[in-house]
Length: 217
Ligand code: 5GP
Image (cartoon, rainbow, N blue to C red; front, top):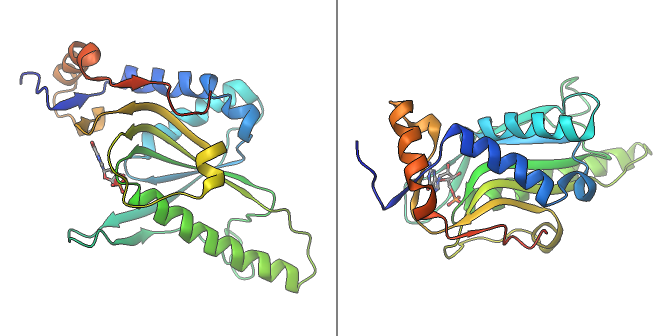
């Protein structure tokens, strides 16, 4: 396997470093104080797990809870999305339901390409939050408005098809690295991890467009 210059290879070590440096560089803890992580399946799994570790080392206390949502893009021209997995939000009937009140919810994915997935995730969570807010108010229960933020390892500098709310983009959009539109090969995509790591290390200097230009620093 040789280095394909049309791809960006990321090693486990690079992934780990990007996430740790991003938390520090963006002052994520001071700015957002996350209380709940939501991993978008399946690319968000490992970044979320690593992120939780970094957050714990910076914040102290218990490890943050991780919830998972599954989203899939239809292979059509419409770029529609459907849910394959979602969190329980029915606080009335389900003891495992997520209680949003007072939470600072950080949605985590590996890459923001067209922003379709992230935009859908935020919109659907906002709908769930609204339902829960209404229920709490009907029952005269105290409600503290939750905050939503987004963490991505890579943001591709390509034309976006969807947007995120202004508040997220201006304040709570945490990006590891802004990169070109090339295909990113993550370590979990590799079959031969030693070869993949070698390609990632060789490609390191060739591929990165910009670093730390996410407006969060
Ligand atoms: P979106 O276009 O909605 O921002 O991204 C959709 C999904 O496509 C991402 O969550 C990610 O799983 C996948 N994706 C987009 N670009 C890349 C890439 O360069 N590499 C990999 N491995 N996945 C990608």
